[in-house]
Length: 173
Image 1 (cartoon, rainbow, N blue to C red):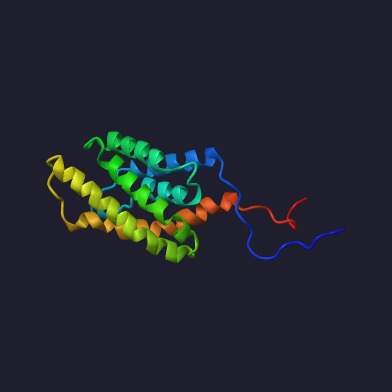
Image 2: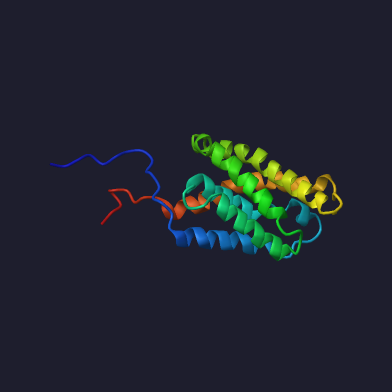
């Protein structure tokens, strides 16, 4: 008895912990690149976007605890206020966990639009934490990273979904 091969999109397989770790390290490395001038204002938070991607796709592996730890790592790497990014990343991860089921129902462009308020809340949380620590607000340019982070969602999603595509029955040897 033979079964017909399924048609339509395949369900992606679960990501390995190695893929998650490598992608998060790549996001951290991109954050640590020496940006200058106007590019510094437009630079998205690569690590945050990758973290939120994994919070949406693998919420049991990457959640608020991982976001907190990565935020602390970002704080130590930037030499800023310890806990500023940790708190902001955790708030963004919490919002993403609340909207996770909803986000998965949208296509990539609509998912990117759903990321906009989450990235904006992260930026606002980071500003509030820095202001309470005595740092001056740098201006509205600080928010330019939000639309660029939203646009970064598209290539990050495509790049991280690619190795997880399940092989089709017709492609299998």
